[in-house]
Length: 266
Image (cartoon, rainbow, N blue to C red; front, side, top):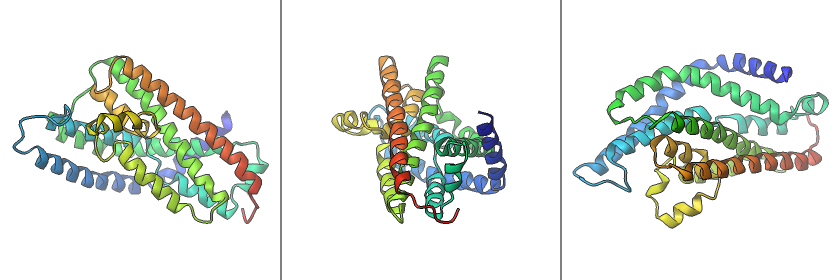
């Protein structure tokens, strides 16, 4: 276990080298969020009713919480780095040393998220305070606890799926197309573009049994009180099942891919 703490420490030190990059990424990441909020303001202009139970303040709060969850869980460049390690032969060293490649990459992912959170906390807090009149807090401590648990599993699910997609580099020279296709579908089906519960009920119910809502929408819905009671427990169980399934899939793809691996470079 000590070696993985060492990996986390090295990951933090390496990531701190690019802390200004993280800061600019965070600050300019608010630009599309401002555009989205402006769009919904225009949609609600002159309306006295709600959209699927969302008032304008509720919709703005949704995107603010979404931004927080995304900052805590998003996989930025890990999949590209993993694919590059495979193509360049850099994973050869992990076949000779007593360290698990998945565990190694998970530690680096965690280190990157810690640094990003540390850098982004000030601008994100200022942005939330700017919209404080529209920002809602969890109903109680239990809701916040369920939210945190879901966020942890969201981060793991995002990482395991991205890790698995990157492992396709064992069979493909270029995995960017596959990653972009997955990202495009995930961007819509995870609730990044709009809340999933404004979709027709049949479509929403189908999506709930896929991994995509649990990559973003589900923890946000817990925070906002859109998912309550028994639905929270059921959702957490489904999310946990998807995390386990994604982990097992990642292990299986690695075991198959390593058989085809030919050490080049490294």
